[in-house]
Every structure is written in C-alpha cells, then in structure tokens.
Image (tube, rainbow, N blue to C red; front, side, top):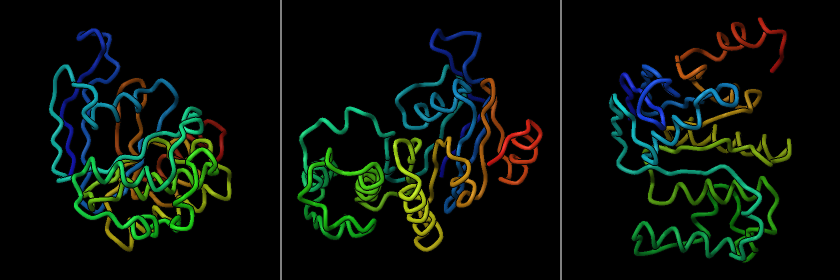
Length: 220
C-alpha cells in the first residue's frame, strides 16, 4: 500500500537532516500509528507521505488508488461558517462524485442527525467524526489521520478510536495515523512506527511501551 525507501529530507536540501535513511512499509489492511516526541520528524514524514513535501533523496511509492485524509483539528475550524451537509457536498464535488447521499455518508460515523448544524457548533469529537466520514467518501484504499484526538474530550476519544477499530477490523480499511495519544492508539494499532531524531523503525505496541515508556518511568 505504501513503501518508503532510504528517504532523506531537510528544508535546506542538505545535512543536518530532519529525516535520515528512513524505511517504512504499510501493507494493505494494516493499522500503523506513527509516534514520537514533538520535533522528532513525524509531522514532516506525514507531509512527505501526503505529497505536500518532496524528499531530497529516496523513494515514496504509493499504491493506494485513493487516499482519504483527516487533518488535525485547529481552532480556526470553529469560526468558519459552513454546515456539515455543505462540507460533505463540497468534498463530493472535489471527488467528482455524481451522486452524494449525505445521510449515507454520515451514517458511517453516526453523524447523519447533525447534517444541518454548523461545523463550529459541534464538539471536538463530533467534528472529527464528520471529517472521518468525509475522508471515507469515494471508498479510499488508505485512510490517513493527523492526531485524530487533538481537542477531543476523553469520552469522544474512545468513540473515535472505536470507529477506527471497526473500520479497520470489520471493513478492512488500511489506516495510517500520526499519534500523540498512545493510550488509545495502542489499543487499535497493529504496529507502531517510532520516529526519533529523524530516524524511524517499526515495533510492536508492547515493545514500544517496554522500551520507551516503562524504561523512562512513564505510563500509557
């Protein structure tokens, strides 16, 4: 689904590198979360995967026919005067979909009852559920999320990760997420990709907790 080989990146085009000798593989049907401290390079890696940035060297091979993307929630989202229904219609037009059944689109995340509401009036969890439903329009092969629980209360966080777990396990959606919420992401991810000082490696959730959390005296 997605393969990265020997990737190097910096904004100057030379060392020191923000990402160095990065290799990564996401198979169809997998759920992988990218984790790491702030400034580790995980957000930069996501921008490269999405095509917003180009690597200085190395290759990024995307085999997905279509990618659905859920951006990180920002404070400005609440001030833009647009309804849930308009968000869905606008994205459908962008995808050149001939017919858009708003209720059907929103039913995936149980948000069909909110279609007439302004996006800014929704809670953080409701907002993210709308964006997840939008990202699934056109049946993407790969769903990419950027810190899906940012600005979301604990109860809604559990709801969102339950939705993602269902999409992954019951509907076979391939998922890649940049995460800071290890407590929830660790429950639903098949593996984690740990980025540290521009380098990355795949590991199991258990290994990451033992190696990087418990050893440093932290907790999940």
